[in-house]
Amino acid sequence: MKLSPINQIELYGFEDYFFEFIKLIEENKLPNKILLSGQKGLGKATFSYHLINYVLSSNEEFKYDNKNLVIHPENHSFKTVVNKSNPNFILIDVDKDKKSIDIDQIRDSFKYLFLKSNSKRLLYLENIERIETRTFNTLLKFSEEADKNMIICMATNNINIVPKTILSRFQKLKIPKPSNEIIKQHLTNLGLNFDEQKNDFVLQNLNLLSEDEDKNINELFLKFDEYEAKKEIPTKDKEEIRLFLDYQIHKIKFNMLKLKSNNKRKLDELRDLRKQILMPHNLSLDILKSKLCLYI
Image (cartoon, rainbow, N blue to C red; front, side, top):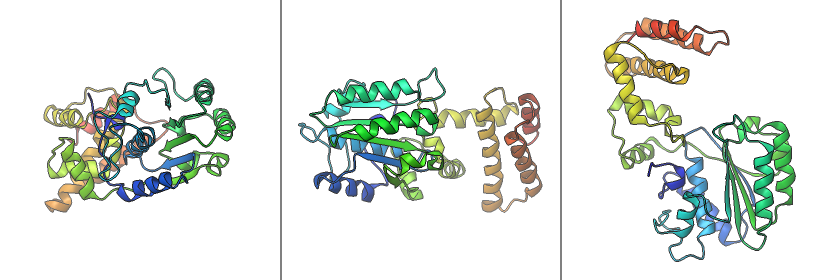
């Protein structure tokens, strides 16, 4: 099974925050509307799934280990959430064939959970920055009708685009960036052992550790090494090209700092190229790639 937030049994870097949530749950004071925010890749989804498991597995044989913040592999709720068969949990995210979360997803999910009013139910919404304004209105309407046994947890990479009507009704928690030591330990636990320069690049680009299951950091770095060796960039993926450019900029800055190399002119030229990528009417991909190849 490929590791992702939904099946990650250990929680790193958020112990103090999670213990606060445990205390609220035990005192029956946990808000039933929670909004987590923070930079992409920090672990908002992993945090949410651990909270979800703590609530759902409270009466199970292999319940959540609240001392070590670990989910037992034989935990029933863990298994059923992973295979999407838990009757008391629904995940709302952007469908692969769509660009945003639509009204029907919100309406159908709430209506289903409303039918199970005698048990704890959890609704988790990922990527809420991709909800349209009119869909937010529907979300607000149904969230107001939710009873105390229904917990609505949402996560966003950009809290600034969430409507004020939502912000005013949800308990907000900003997830901070864990220390570099914790992130490095997390990379080691994932079996991701990079050299110092690549490790530093990951630390500065935590979105590489995001919940995108199609993304594999090892494969990405292997591609980058191949691009450098062959001095050509065959991909047509604009985001990957931008990331490769960022990687080249980082390498120069890293070497200037560590090796005292002087590549300021090259650094400035790459930074200028990056600005051109971000412009609305930017260069064609072929011209962009040919220019970038001159610097690798």
